[in-house]
Image (cartoon, rainbow, N blue to C red; front, side, top):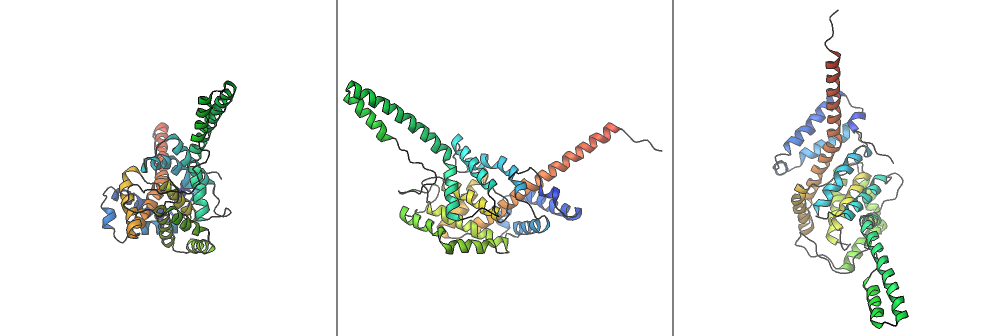
Length: 336
């Protein structure tokens, strides 16, 4: 599925006055965000709720039109949110978003457990491939040493070869559930035992869980769906079913679930890291999801502005500049 860097506003069937009003509203929102207290002042979340409602009512956006701009911004930001910035981790994030980009919501089957496993496997594929290559190199060296040790009847070399083979592991990390204990960084919360985590995570394979998700997906209230999928991802992060990469995996899953409802993909910037962690901890520890729900309402508005209104405004500005240059080059028109 090809994605284009096209603003939904350029192709929306919306009258000029309404478009101008909506554009102004989002520009004012972007200015208001400079005052970080706007989040605290807006206790009922009326600002993001109204913006999202009007945008979806008037524009009827195409998810794919926003994805190209998102890809350019996402990986650099996400890699820094949990301080996991290595070439392999960036490659893994790109593979994850190739998968989300190509996921066909009309045809491809969706399941919270299965899609989480796929995302985690892709996230760690570059690292697993790198490890597999290193393991193969060690095995080859050990086998060469073993053959030489047999020929030379060198017991020390034979033991060294055996130790080399014993030290390497061929098991891959991506898509594997944890077997031991794990600590959740940044949060004062006890992580469930691995057996409990596995049992809880496996419940998402049950027909009841799948039916529950479908019911929320088909609910006409977009905020009911947002609240549900945010709550699910918070619960999954609290379970820590994987040995590492849980937050990145389930934030990616959240974006896939947003795609299922035609909501824009979101990313968290480095400066928003603390606010995100505070809201996430409140959800995990106190089971109070109001703050994390509000955080994502604002992030959806951010994405609508960044991925739709900003390209539209930039394109219009370029057209205005081009028209001005053309008028100057043509010179003043003579009066007849």
